[in-house]
Image (cartoon, rainbow, N blue to C red):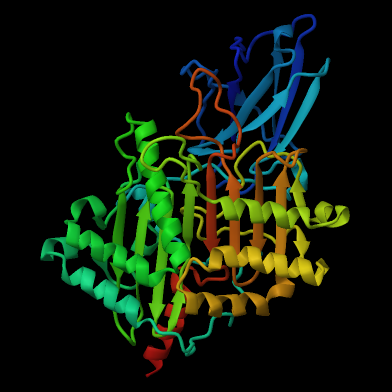
Length: 501
């Protein structure tokens, strides 16, 4: 079969018609699209799509290639009326979409766009933003295929660094967490309990998502009576710090507020959260729990005195409640302001090293749902290039996230972070103005943190094109790279030790 790739086009408001086969006319803009397709399995399996905003109609546009130089290519002519407008486009191969891109018609004459699949900086291949969201619904063939892939974890080069997470006695107690989870499970009926309990090695760990329409398993807060709900929040109270509990409750309150702003979406609400439990609460054997819902996902693994609280996903849209019973509520103020303060503490040369890209026109988070094996090279500025005061500022920013967990274990995690400080990198993405939306990433062998101002999803003027990232929609992710998300490296060591016995 002849290989082909396809171009999906979106045109910004106001709408003007564009046809792939139109002939060039005097004064028209001619764009030459060249795509280098990398990292896409089975590129022979392709589909066609073309969307003109606001029309839902699709029009296929087939690209030629690949040519001898490895590029797929195509030319399209646009009328003079395109002047000053912005073209939004993306490529598609099979059921996979590339990132959305844009081009502004501000120069006369033919122009060439050279793109590499998944990257913003062409063939340099160093600037990779968030890839299109993937949603593998439970018990479907795509999900089965995805979860059949071996878990590797987040790495910087494709292979985990070994011996980073030994089993050890920390001196911190996990008894209160075990007690809280046991009390909750004991309060459930047999039918309720069977819905939310799974083996410790279950793939249920990896089945989570931020999207509200994701089909979740487990026991939902809305299914519980008042006593059971109190016990459910008792799990959060004992597992998290006071700050972490307050942050989680604030996210839920903001979700309740969002539901009042979008009454048409019945999947939103302050109690749309589900608990699952892997293994049996034990003082000696591994076990854990997960809470999963829109803008709040916590995975919590326990092995004797050790805890791994990743992946953790927290977000909010909006970030400020202007009305309602939670009027005045604000979310992620500290994570936002401390991130910006740290970046501004850098001098000009340091900022240049930290800055990965000078435009924030799309989302940048790389490690959200179903991205457990993402390869993310170290980028930005190394902590070794920071002054002592700046290093303290970076550690303070990291602590803003780590200190969501139980205090004793947060202290232990920060010691681990400190031991790898010289291998820690800070990356920044933002436009020209300090008030613009931004993204930052903190990346070391033992922790990865992402903060991203995101494109609006629930709240935006639908009479206009969807805007780019805004400060009223925030996503954050915390990961344990090199194979210890979900405590999997600790679990592997535990099972190997038991096998030797």
